[in-house]
Image 1 (cartoon, rainbow over the protein chains, first blue to last red):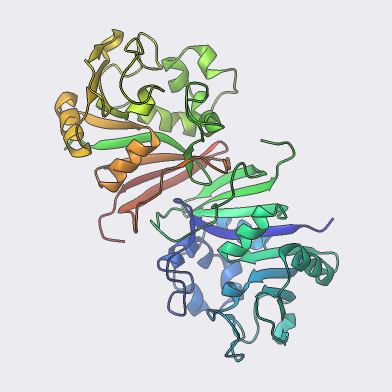
Image 2 (cartoon, each protein chain N blue to C red):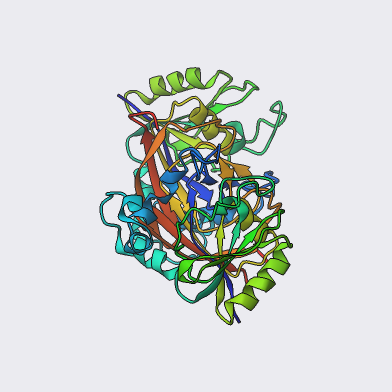
Length: 222
Length: 222
């Protein structure tokens, strides 16, 4: 059975997955880039983006690279929230915005962007097509499975989108990377979940730059 | 200079340091015991308590043991909140309660119990004396340093007591053990801190049962 998977989703040790004041100047929120240092230096990330995006950080650990690379395997479609696609809010006043990732986004498969505001699909170079979907989480997931053609679906983010799928219990596997950072404020991944979360941690390992935890849906109530 | 140190303070990966409904039946809150599995199996913990408390868990990792043991070194006094001393709330109606730890508590030095309700000190076997203090965090810390006689002071818990000292920026070193558990609800350590926390992570390592993070006060504003 194809799965819904979360990979390389960075959270600070005090529980924030994005900083405050997300917007054009701070796409990840204030201080939010600090959560992602571990992935910026991985070969997988560097291959996807221009070297200037990755910066001139020292080479990453093999552990970080193994997790970064695992997120790219066996994925046939991606779901993301509208805020991950861009910084515009409300109706699409500027349809020239085609995402953060340039002309050849690093997806190379269908990407379903969840939004309250319809917009025609955008076919990009390299096999990525952005589809704008206004349906509920279950329906979007079904559409993503259909487009993935037997492969898994990856849930990209942002924070509130992952939280919605977590609340609905629709995530099959989740890899969180806890960055050795205390952000102090921002947007929490684990919030308003109201009671035991039906996931169990099946692996916990650390590099100096991230504690990686993998979760699957709990087989028994905890 | 003697320091105020936090050690072996367990937090779930979703940020909770105690479960809900703390009380006589659930001293650590519902599910709260799951946060401490990593320490229950360490030789340090087993030496302190009766084998039946430690349970029949498999032997711990050497990493977990190293962290557990570090908390016992160079400490001349302990500060704890009243809820860590016992489950009573409000005035001390039952002064026969002398803590969770039996006649010979595993402190062997002065323990300052923060409370709104004065009570005479209790001298226990083995060198532990419980002093009940009604002062503010700074004053209690000064009293603890005086009693520690040149050694460090350890901040034991519970959650709200550590949070108060964190808010006041009075903690010098803090070791948090992130348990591979999602509790879903409970009491957060990092809450109402209102902005960047002035601590930096100086070490991040994991056993299969805990991601250990050590923090010191940040040398520069972050």
